[in-house]
Image (cartoon, rainbow, N blue to C red; front, side, top):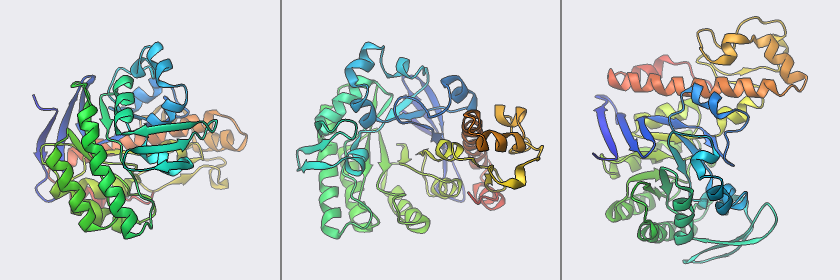
Length: 366
C-alpha cells in the first residue's frame, strides 16, 4: 500500500481528502500538527493533547539535539516514549532554526557551523548528520536539511539557498536508511516563482515521500503566501502529501487547503492560548478584557473541549489576571480543539464538494 492515498478530490478547487499511512497509524488529511518544540506541546499533558484529536504532532530536531541530546532520548526509550506518544510524529531537520535562531559561524555547500543558543557551543550540521539524527529520533516523517533564506533576501541569496536546498536534499536521500520513516523534501525560493518552479522540479526529479513548502509565513503577507502556494502545488506529484510549514491562522489554512495543501503546523494555538487569546468561529476572544469579568458563557457554545465544558469566560479572565497557570492550560486546550475541529469540518466539506462554501460561511477573523 502507498504511504499516501488521495481519497477524494474537491470538484471546485485543488483541495483533496487523503489518508497518510505511517508506522504509528493512519492520519486523515488535511491535518493540523500541534508543535512539540522541546519534546512537549507547551502547557498541556499528552493525555490532554490526545483528547483534542491531534492525529500527528511535530518535534523540533534543533531543540532536541541541543537539549537533552539524541543519546539521552535514545537511552530514555526513543522519541515516542520520550513524548508519551503512541501516534505519529514528524520531526523537522533543524534547518529553519539554525538559520533563524543561531549566530552562524560558517556556511558553505557542505553544511553549517553555528553557536548553540543554549550554551554557545559550536555545532556542525549538514545533510548527512541532520538525516542521521532524525533516523535515530525515529519519528514517522523526517525532513530534508534545507537553507531558508530570510524574508527580503536578494535574488543572489535566494538562488544560492535554492541550490543548496536541492543539493542537500539529494544527500539527505542518499543518507536516509530507515524505510519505515518517510522523508520529505522542502521547496524553497521565497516568493520568486521561477526559483520555486526550479526547486520543485529538481526535487520531484529526485523523488521523495512527500513535499513541503518552506520559507513562507515569514513576513510576505497572506496574499503573496497563497499566490506562491498556488504556484507550487501543481508542480508536485498528486500522489504525494504536501506540507505547508509554519502555517498558520485559520484563514491561511483554509486558503492553502483550497490550493492543494494537505498538512500544516504552527505554534499559534498554544502560544496564543498562553496569552489569553482564544480562537472561535466568530473571531478571537481576548480573555483579559473587562468585558468578560462576569460572563458566564464558555469560550465557545457547543465546543466539547474540557475548558468549554467546565469554565466560564469570567473564570478564565480571573485565572489570567491573577497569574494562575490553569488559565493558559485551559485556553491552549480549547485552541487546539478548535483547530482539530476546523480540520474535521474542512475534511467533511471536501467530501461534500463544498469547501468553497464553508470558507465563505465561516466567520474567521483570527
